[in-house]
Image 1 (cartoon, rainbow, N blue to C red):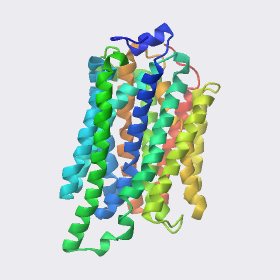
Image 2: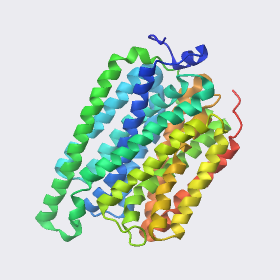
Image 3: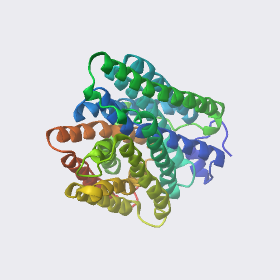
Image 4: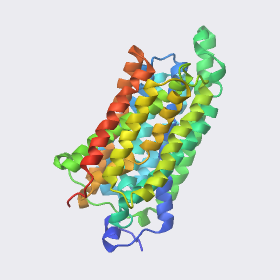
Length: 424
């Protein structure tokens, strides 16, 4: 039984398992932050049309969001080690709620930079949450099933990324599909921007209320979650990068997240093109749910496969499949181009949790520091989409897809190189 002060690693060493209720609550966090993150794919076409942005400017939404991982991950690891997993989760949820509430002044003034600030604060909270929840779910049970357990939790993360874009497309993109902002000017444009921005603000107020309610629940249960292992200094954490398994894993997370976010960010605009599916904004936004839905299905399947197949080999195969589907989309037109890109989500499914758990193998009490470094690498979602956006502005959206295709090859290399268990 878990009692106050019991660490996740203590549970693991005892060979026990966490209570089912605690596992369900932690898995629910994966669902929530996955859904909120995927709403960025809906915000990009909304803000692009609202403020008449280029692709590079629109990708600043992802830059602001994922830059938080680079700046907050290591301090978050230090905080989690001192606060414990329970209080750390409450802190993460509270910061997320604060970020959502910042959408209110951004919406009331219809100011794009304020939206970027709100996204950064929201992502800072998600970063704290991830630094706590990823190692916690991996450690709440036997070590030999950590890959499967984290992949299972990430399946619910993907469930969130499947459901939230579908609902968000109807709420956030529904009205903009009937009005072309480029046809408006003067007072009419200002009125349109204020009205559409208010839709975004109201959506995030509702999310903030839900987050605060869940934070209150975790505060009541904080003692049962347990304590984290002691954390090292910043310099000590960075020294862990000398460990090849972890250092290369940090790079793999960087390129994987960059590839996944780039495709999700481009997808709505890509599916609008006559050369692909020629859809309207709302219909294209709803199809983003299929991209993330493929990841959800793949993670449930992957949770079973990872019990019998080498995680590294499975990761390499999935990354090669993602690269191949992306290149096929670039080389095709019509429904083939559209649906092969959507199918990349199925290949993405096991990548993040498998890279994460492979990189943490053998770290022992240094797991929180390793988790902080891996979460910091999620900044790839800020850098790679900007590069893809610049390629799209100077060339085509199809050409921009070559950027994530190259990222998947790097992930495949890491998977094959990590096909054997790591030494402690």
